[in-house]
Amino acid sequence: MKALLASLLLAAFANPLAQGTPRVDLGRLDYGLAARALAPGVWVVEGANADFSPGNGCNIINTGFIATGSGVLVINTGPSKRYGEQLRALIARTTNEPVVQVIHLNLHPDYFLGNQAFADVPRLATDATRAGMAREAKAYEDNLYRLCGDWMRGTEAMLPTGTVALGPLHIGSRDMELREYRGHTDSDLVLVDKSSGVVFAGGLVFAQRIPTTPHAQVGPWLQSLRAFAALPVKTLVPSHGPVRADASAVGQTQRYLQWIDGRFRQLAEQGAEMNEVLRSEVPAEFRAWAAFGTEYTRNVAHLYPRYERAVLKGGTP
Image (tube, rainbow, N blue to C red; front, side, top):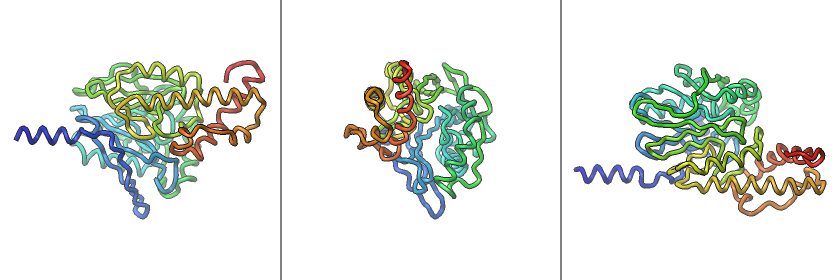
């Protein structure tokens, strides 16, 4: 019997990186959320590796939750009230422990627009993230309603209730750590579960997907990635893209940002217009990533004007 139990446990965690694709039911507005165990007590709930669309219900984020022995810690709450409700129901089906806390890793809409389903528990973020959410919440609501329609019905931004403490995080039997970086946004939280080696990297790291850049600063982001690369990582959960068993997604994100930095600087020095940048060649590796057709265009719109200004003023983007 012990041998059988051991083999079942081994099978449960032997392939934690098999990508889980949500089985969306458009008629029922069901996200088809599934919890995939990455380690004992640690689950990821994977979104589509894509851009926001009605077909995926604006669910392109990997959320997660950790059973601590004294309650469940939820990592991000998704893009809508409906998502939050379905996430909470999934947690209840997966573990008997109650939800005791929510952590938001940055200010972007799919990190907190599911908060209405978690109105009864503390919801924490950094001060910079809280300020950004308050500033952007109405625009986020309007944009996601425009993009995903009925999926967003009833969704109203509910902000965090408090400020998270950086450093060691102890809940129940769980020894965790919260680290703050910057570059993708002004405040990029990373949650490290020390016992399992699972790292929820938030928006700092993208895997096989073009990074989003509405609040990005390329230089600080690259500096943060260099520091992040020193962390011991067994399993890396990016907010967007497939879960990885190594640091390869860190390298992907670095290569893309380094290419953006060098290429945009070069084109700005040549006096290229934005439409010329959009027509210029992009390496095949990046063209093959999810959301290239839409996200790269947004990258150019967000970032290239800074390089133009830097060339004119002799500063840095």
